[in-house]
Image (cartoon, rainbow, N blue to C red; front, side, top):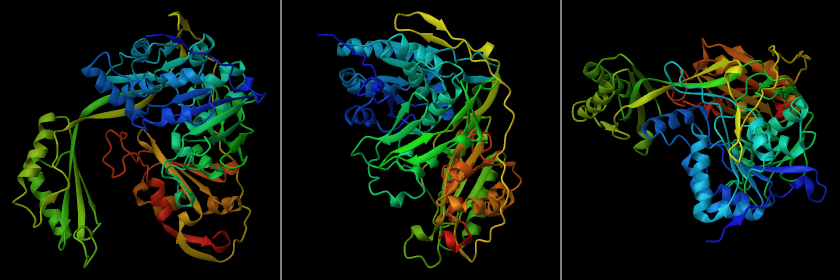
Length: 570
């Protein structure tokens, strides 16, 4: 088979004097749309295509995969996508940067080389390693969040494909921009601007209308396009998507993604501390939003580490309770199951989804969820047996939504922080050379808050309506904490939002948060507020017993609550 050498074009900055590098995204998580890579490569101009496959939960999944197969530990779907698209990427001169290497970036890099040999397409492959900090006491995985400079080093050495392990999601964008423009390590404003662009596009279609509170206003959300960041030399950017693709890019869709899984106004990363209170958004035409004004400073003095441990086993079942005497039926089956396997480690939740005098059986039914967490795998398995054995000896109409399976291991995430001296950030170049990179000198980052003074404005008559009539939300998980970002559709309503939605009011609207530590952070530049609810998700998504273990619908729950809203904003 004939072999072809991948061309390396100069980038969008060298075409028609545009002065930008176009970086697109084709994956927001391990399991995202397989066709996205081809869609992005064929849909229009790109210089770099990124793929984000990693999350805290994903590292646990890959850790368990590596236990079974030491040669695994990476996102195998990336190889499937590349088999379909490598020729396209070469033909169009698009470089690919991905963290699909997971726990084994060297293994994935080798798999890509083997694929290129099979296809007869010559490409330069490099990878970034050094994030793996195992062995660590009791840990299944322990990975430092590396930054952008290893990626930049690989690209400067001529790599067409760069595979990484655990880097910050935004680094997939910052690295190519830094390499393209030749940014210095202390060019913090430009690095911060690229970090913001990376944060916006890292979750794929969430920037183009996916998971958007006001989704009914988007004309075509049947097959949303993936986002693109056009980054300029000063770090400013325009977020857009390929022409003719579904979804929408608006100031609000970008705002929603900016608020996703953040904490305070300082966004801490290994290369730069980005000040989210300096971000300015403006419409730049249809499906184009300009991001400017972003300021940054030195990174923190420590490096964050994602640690996953195993902590026993879990199992679960859902009983369907139909018709009358719902509470009594729930009490009976609870009493029976606890007598069979003991009550230790059981968590029960009764969802009253039933309606009186319902015209369908489903509408007449409630759901009783039970989960067991135990250090004993035999007890987790016995849970299944005990649940099924009740089928003919419990409440009338006994049924389960699905037969329970054997127990599965519980993973627990925790963050740790180490000195950069403990992490050997290494770029393995296409020629096999290892370049160990220095870390940017960090600085202490003191917690900041944005000043706000209540102007005392009388907003006039109110009407009791769902909060979501005037407020959008985006929520998610960070370990055991839930992040809840809210923005008002009309900037003049920001003062009302801050005055109204205090921590105390949030607790009254969302009773699950009672007794939990809650932070509130203000973003006047985005007309937004972010709450961090500590401990809502327990030990994290893999161990959570909550109905919504990743808090993805937490914001939509709040939007459904009724409050008094000034009529001037409706």
